[in-house]
Length: 599
Image (cartoon, rainbow, N blue to C red; front, side, top):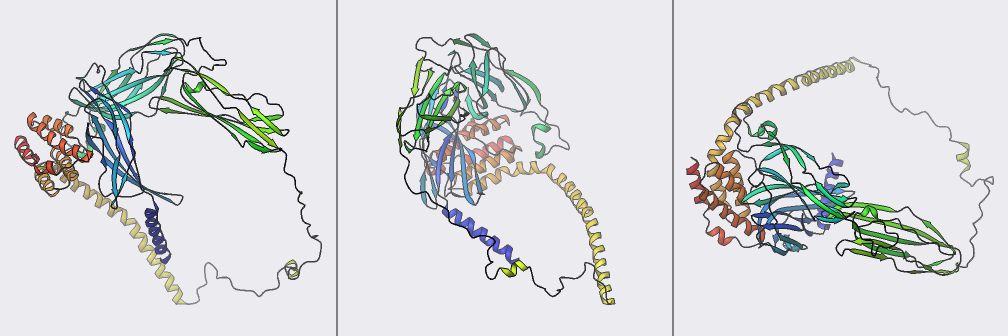
């Protein structure tokens, strides 16, 4: 027991020490660097603020540069880890920002206060472009679109092929079939991303999947529509009351869905041949952008030592075309080439590759040696011409070997010499020892009736324990069965009770959170969930207005409530003051009027 308490104490001390030693840092990330706005389109971008080195913050982050955006919260999460004795704590805040105008905007820094000290994050740049022509089927609740980053390309130039699945209803069982076209290959660029997009006054959830489409030959290619098979669940569908009329079963698995087939637009891609003019010798077919780094370490060695030449290629495009370079022969130097290493990583805009090559240089004579430059040619799509990158010309200086005496090993005594004093006893073996009693037999002999009585009592205790083990499962089964029956009776009436008390509970909680706008937003979310039997983890003013309108609330009332909560939400996440908004708060009166309409 003492040992366990000691271990717990050490663990607590270690945790406190880890928190004290951890350095607080703040990072701001965007899931994309581009978005679109205009013609009824407004794409939401996910913004994440990651606070490392602490388990809690004094307040929510205050983010600068969000004035041109509508902001809604996406929740927060925390994590504590101890890996190999290293303590780490992280808090992550998620937001969704929707642009209200086009332009190039700098978002951040995010300011976070921890133990009274303010920490700042980095900044991110978001380019908001004017939206092109919108999808053809905006009135549908579920539809699929496809687009190319450019309608014209060169042979071996990867083109960005983007599929966007627009959703206003729940779906499941998705199965994607890509178009099959000769001489065109698809490579997926990372995992699908999810965000929200407002189109024609309606808000959609968008699942975006990106592919690198690479043409192998020139010509005009007609790309057939992509196809998605899925099951769609109507959010307005009413299920019959019965055994499964329980919030637990409010899941697509327990609701009837309609199988649907969605198809995107057909696209056309024109592919041109790479020009012959200016093509460098030994061109490998690399199309994209390429950078080269090189180093020679060390540049000064002595005869008998070796130096290492390292060349690193970093580029984007059809990076699988990066060549394996060969170092020309150098007089009086032996060259040993290492196996090249190559890594390819999908990015948002295409493929990025890194190839590293090394050579060991072993000179046979002293002197100065010139290491020739290595060149790589590629086709720059942006400039529509060939470019060449090369390594510098290095000089390897080889000096004479160091002079000096060669060390000789010390002599060792012969093993057959006389043994040191004190070791002769060990050689003779252990001395004679007295016999000691190490223990008793496993089943000791009983020498009196008292011992027999103890055995009988032990056997009786064992039989009682056996009966207890046999009866405990039966008692647990009866208890669980009784609890399930009682829960079945109470759960049926639980949604009605929550709906009846939703408004009263909201007004009471809302009034208590007078100086805490985030708590008021949480109270509003709980009101919507309890009033209509939902289980939403987060809700935006836009979504709340749609729910109220579907339940029969007048549009002007729903829009007024949406506008009031939108002001509070924008003020929270943009770091602006909320006192003036909260002082003139029409929300309680709006909720009372809405309750009258619903009743």
